Image 1 (cartoon, one colour):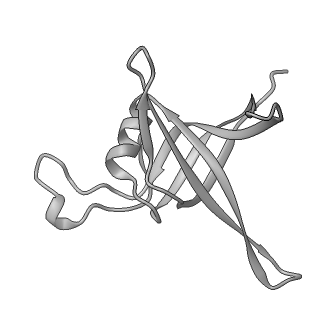
Image 2: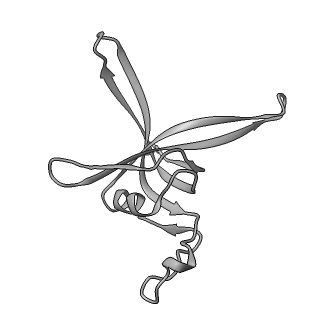
Length: 126
């Protein structure tokens, strides 16, 4: 039996994606995604923030299409990154490395052209 590390998150973009390139020229996008869980006992929502990392074409599309507040469905795997700060304290970052981004927004009609139709709900970046 094989292990599975797969996650799907549906939420809202917390910040505009920041895109950089690796030394070999591969684009990497970093942004946050907020998901909300409704706590029935407290009768209030609880927001969880997720660190999202996208590589290659999904990173390019994230840079072009995504803005803070937009809804997004992310599919990928969870990775843990360990680092040591200036004081020598060890920290662990849990990140979702996205291999698919499903855009849940449409471009304004003024941006649509015959060659580039409006983005449909559920359009995939990967």
